Figure: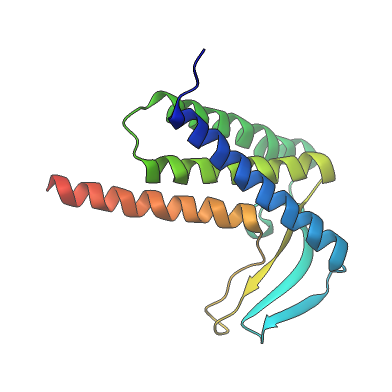
Amino acid sequence: MKVSKRSIFIIVSIAITIALDQISKVIVRATISPRDVIPVIGEYFSLHNVENEGAFLGMGSELNEPLRIILLLILPIVVLGFVLRYIIKDKSLDNWSLFAFSGIIGGGIANVFDRIAFGSVTDFFFVKLTDVLRTGIFNVADLFVTTGMIILVLGSFRKKKQTV
């Protein structure tokens, strides 16, 4: 069976996403004590070591254990499986869309892996431009998921503009 360049692109993109995320988390766990704050660019960009038992911004951390397992482990695995199947089957997707979906899948897999292996997800980046313009604490996987979503949204606007 011959593996296409397209399939290799998808697999390598997902693998690089997972690797970058997991390597960054190993470094953070080894070098930053929990709850420490390390300023990188003044108060605008800092590194932390926070274990997040929930999803994005800690949402879901207060749920009971069976519900957390369903919503934070089983459901994401099923959705990621469907997205992977979709991008493998839909040959009309352009490289930007493949990269975006691969980033979303890789980031999702990396965070699900953390939940299974550690019971939580290690978050460490924090950006604060002003008291209002600031992020929650996030990680490389979250960055790939968010970037993938932005690429898909911008791509959909571009496609709509071309069809009008």
